[in-house]
Image 1: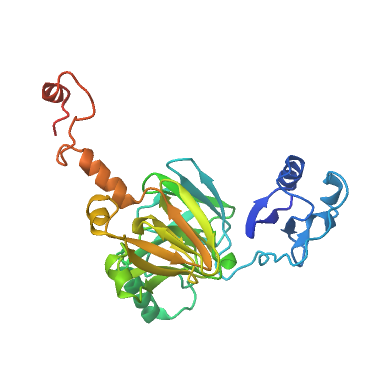
Image 2: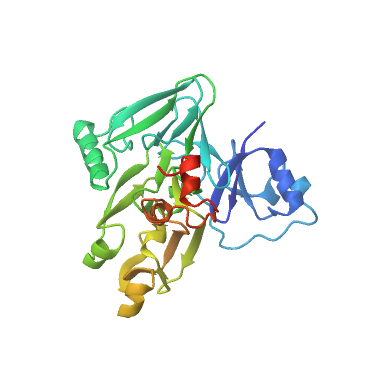
Length: 343
């Protein structure tokens, strides 16, 4: 059965089966204007103009939408991987690889893999293909970029060396959401916080982005250096808590807690602003500065940065002064001795 791709909201969705598309038609999730693509087609085509799908349309054909810009057809310089995100609070992403395809990931993020998957540790960011590339100097440059962002010098490449499709899964490091980002539909580049990258298709470059403004570097929460993801493949970033995506218009500004920024497009201007007055800065609990993001471009925010989560866990611990304060135990400290909770 052929595999289909759909273009929904400027994003490529798929692969899906023909039955999945028919079900989506009946539920109203896709329409006659939805752009679809499958093997044998030269370009993205309106669903209403595809003979295999048009008979399942509920009613007359809808008029074409003028000026609709489809995403590029499948086929990338980076490896074209399929994926499935599983879970709600503690998610993991399962990547399906065709023979010869590879995915790169941070060390320690692998959850499970099938027997046909080969695992190899590489020096650098994994953007160079196994054949060719820029040799030792390219590997050293990629490793140097990762060292500057506080990451390991090494990454792990997972390659399907079997005869059929094989799967490998990567787990989120703490509660939150995994966001698939197709760089081919985002202008080929994304700026993100240093610890948000989880994994990507082989061919995506994980580099550095220097903050040119000294105020952003000193007070921006992420320092002078953030991660720059470049290429035309799929990459997966992780956000703490809930994820919120916003589209900023030209000149539109949003004030954000510095730790809540997950990623932004390079067209978004990132600056730092003082909270307003000394009393609010000292006793408001929000810090001295917040970030100002000015469009145009997309930004992705998280509701629970890892630093905030760690601080709250420490504050609730015995060493942080929290102890059993909120538990309401009638035994108090004696109860801690009895149940071994005074470590």
